[in-house]
Length: 363
Image 1: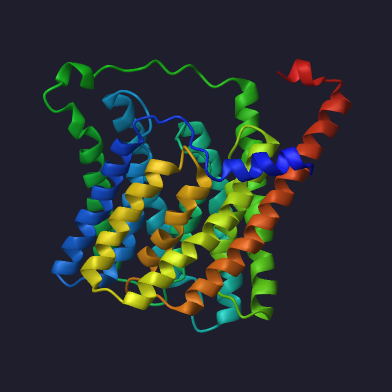
Image 2 (image 1 turned 120 degrees about the horizontal axis):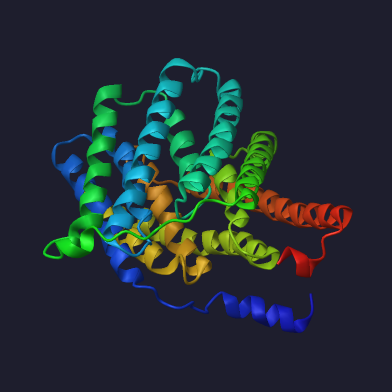
């Protein structure tokens, strides 16, 4: 890497892309997670908070013009999250051996790898944005890892209510604008090449998430790091992007953003705020993450890191051990993801050469 490339890489850490009304989706997602969390805090049902957090991810799928188009996309994403949450609960209750940590770690990796591939394909054919299965990997593995989850019916009700709230918030802007609500944007059919690409992408999600999870189990046990699914989540981050360079950059930004985000976690541990203040921080971090994620992934990751850690440790509490796990697993996963992107680029070039397709033809 020459000096010019180093300068461009350093500049990318602080350069913001064009704004696309990011403050509105930031506000919608922040309210969508804060309101149900504060309600659960008031009724003393902290055991349901994790299901609310993942149900609220439905609001992330709102970066589309037109209220009907947004409602359609968020309804599809909400149904998918509802299914993933339900399967994770069933896996935790009837399949995962929580009394055997080593077996449990491999069960989580195996099941989550399947979820990574299946949800990647489903999001592709449903045309959900953001694409891929990052959020579904996170939701399934985190819930399946809970040794004693809340009762199935209550947990699913909490998730469903949060999903419906996200749908309502997403469509609330149409109040008083009913004529615009029903305007639909025609969606052209998927081409054969796009369909094939969706299946190939699903395969890469399986391979990348699976390898990262396996390495997290093997290496993580040697360095006493838990939360193997954080490595799986980090591994699929570089798979999003239009070019190999952008994908590698996302992987690097994931690591650097995580390290900086640890400073925010350290501050929260130091001040040890009340639970309702932590819930308020979740809403704030969600707002800032959505404000920045499409404009600068490094800066967004600075807030995604404490958001993920606080959101999944509200009951158990933040600790330096959790910080250590996050850093180690993120480095493992990002390294696997970056290597996977480079391998995929090489493999694609080899296939094009064998088929006699030039770069110009590919375009």
